[in-house]
Image 1: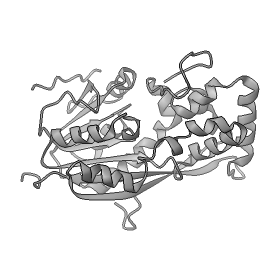
Image 2: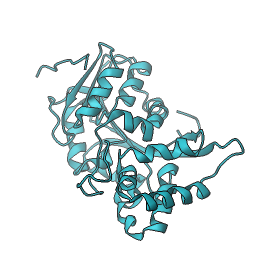
Image 3: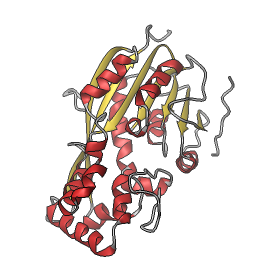
Image 4: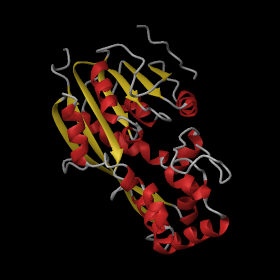
Length: 294
């Protein structure tokens, strides 16, 4: 199968879519479509965590990479800059995200395709490294997706992914949902920490093991997420991009103002007004049956 190119379009310690309030779709439906809004929300923290992930993987140079759920291109950008790949193919179901990725990445080694992680439009045993960054928990059938990762991985290839720890380690959303559910108990069911049980070490390890991958490991990745001031923290929640911003957009103005004001009192704030938080992700890796070819 020929892959069409669309160019236009580890540390020693081991720690390594715009909706509006009038939109009739339910709050629980995810909106992941507009690259700029995603970048302002959580996308800006994607590059540093991708760098930690790649340093952990230690994939040799000149390998063929597949980035599943490539989004706006943070992981693909990092692979191109740090891993000396022969090629990087990105697949994502969002045309908006692919447009952003294509605009930011003009390296001739890169190609992007519209596609579903559960049915990748790619041949068997094609890639030396199959990776997915911050996307797997949004796939309706993650076991089927990981089976696809293994299918397209070359013999001895690395299959790896990472997801934000929404339950405890993604501080910007943890503060948000703690305040939101204090004001509105019905928001509890929207909290990613409750909705995404996959974002923990044990479920990730089981998912990789059940897919028949060998040498499965799980690693914690953590990066600082410092906001310049409260507006820098709050403004992305008004963009409707992702579960928390979509919930914010669904609120009437008085309830949105109450949420904002209570959040302002809860967040840790330095004397200069900056807000020092951290973002934690869990990463998992495994291999298929043979080592990389020499």
